[in-house]
Image (cartoon, rainbow, N blue to C red; front, side, top):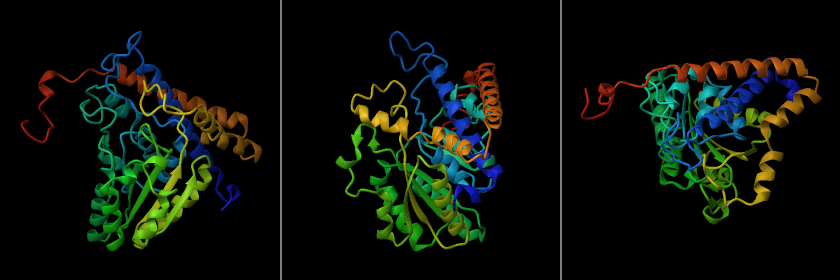
Length: 334
């Protein structure tokens, strides 16, 4: 499938969502560093704690989620803003959650690594490799109910070396569960290069061990991700079982904000800029006369407005009251 075979409306939706994610995260980064200088204090500022951004990886989320419905589930990682936005999570409530405000998705108690939206069937976790068995659980439920919704489990290349990854793939394959396993492979597990931790060149090769399809795709090309994901989601929805997709990504920021990235060679930064999926897709839309500068500018202005509205909503929201601390917890609370 070439870009010419995809409706213009869909292409502009892909671009618009990718641009919204980039705009959101770069804006969030500016707010994150408020109050954290001259000495970097991770607890200071309007966004305390760690912050993991996905700039450069937008194609993985957008290329997959455009094929999903509200009833389909996405279970993300600690770096999940791009999937949350692509899945349609409310931007204002998500921002309030990241800012620790009472109007957030979880009343401001979860923060950016624990975003939950039942309306969109989206969740994420700070535990590496946790998404895989959770997605299998969703797949079992779908099969037992006889419904055709699917689950997408997202992990990084480091998570693909966890036992949960292999256990989940095995069970999903044995029971032909409607699960798409997605590995965002940026070549680094925090500061450990992939060739020092992983025995195979591509994580998609691991699919052979479980008798399921496995594909590796270049994340610089959102259309390539779109095509691969379409096939995997449709296969899952038809009841033909799981698939494994490796999206080769090139992250423009560090593992976390404040990461000095001393482990990362200069060439890796240059490659990430060259492979920027947002810039590449914008050029493609213009070169193919699919969109004009004016059309793209209108989309970009609209995204900037929405992001600013979300930031304002969070800043103007109250913090949770102290008596809320023991509400909504699993044990020891109300």
